[in-house]
Image (cartoon, rainbow, N blue to C red):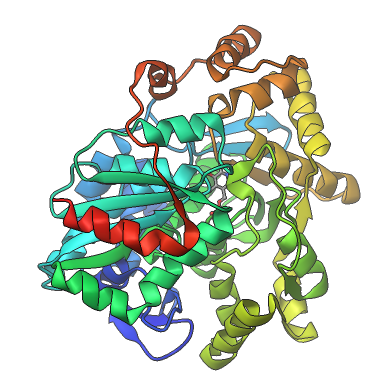
Length: 495
Ligand SMILES: *Cc1c(COP(=O)(O)O)cnc(C)c1O
């Protein structure tokens, strides 16, 4: 399978797409076509374990990788998850399910892909004959950073630097990153928001003189953000797996269409659901849930993507994003794979802070996607209602998705399509906000929050969060968003 850039020009192998992360012209790599899952393969997958299902999906895109190796990489990756199933489906109510993607080593759904990406990258480098040291850069709204650090720590021939918005992540997220161990890692707080981090990192990728400079030090850049196709591919697998679980537990009939509601920031998670649909998974609609930063909600309604607005800091920080990078991949598909038009729209976004799609394109998108958002109180209410009605505790990001799903149910009372709500983080990652939602109690300290939340819910506290309390802080540095390359260079030189 070959990969092309959403902005035209390049055509590369899967290995190359992963290693490079971003196309040289700033576009994102997308598969040349969507591989299909046949009926026979679908039946075979019913019997498979999660790692087997994941390896099967990966092998469709990364057909030049050895399939046995892919399987052992997936087995190794998902053995790091707590419990027997890395992506369990919980039945909340009649026809409503939660897909829990937070049982990995850092308690957020980013682990589903970032435990596998190091293998795809390392193997990709050897297949492409790359001898340089790889420097992975990641901009993070909180969860990618930690998951990438865990995935890449102490990996041979790789260094990783993470940039997070200094005042834009939760206390727990910051603590998780700043206490990271490993000899090849660096964590830097950026004075700015996530969009500043992401655009500064993208700038570093597309600056040729920076690449030259790094080459002198025998270093090549790669990305751990969902702009990297190697991040997206493992995410497609859990949509298949959730569907297969519904079939094998007789909750749905094979072929029956279902809906997903996905808490969305950079549009990576929900795009993977769209890719699953394009591969033949019977998905009817995708509900894109935002928080107060509802650029996407407005886009689905009006066809205008307009980031000229204030970025709100919310209790779902991993969704505090205005520029959702992966939407570029959807635009590319919806425009009939028109790379010139996609490039033009992205240039407009950069220069004018907005672009629009045609009414015809907007309707095409609306056949599959709709968007909704949750204000801060809406999110609290949704979490509280579920807790009171069912005893289930969810995190703030999933709370936003819950609100959007409930709005859909209210508006479509006769709709019997089953709904899967994607849960992206362990509630203990945001203990104070979750505690407030389910009990009304306010505590200042995160660990007191954990203790009280445990008392209120009896949910097990994940070890990786409990032990943070005693870990020494290793990283305290902050940098100006215009000076991130200097930080990168310093890190590179510092052998
Ligand atoms: C990253 C993240 C999201 C947003 O996912 P995207 O793929 O960026 O849309 C939502 N919730 C949590 C907890 C996250 O970490």
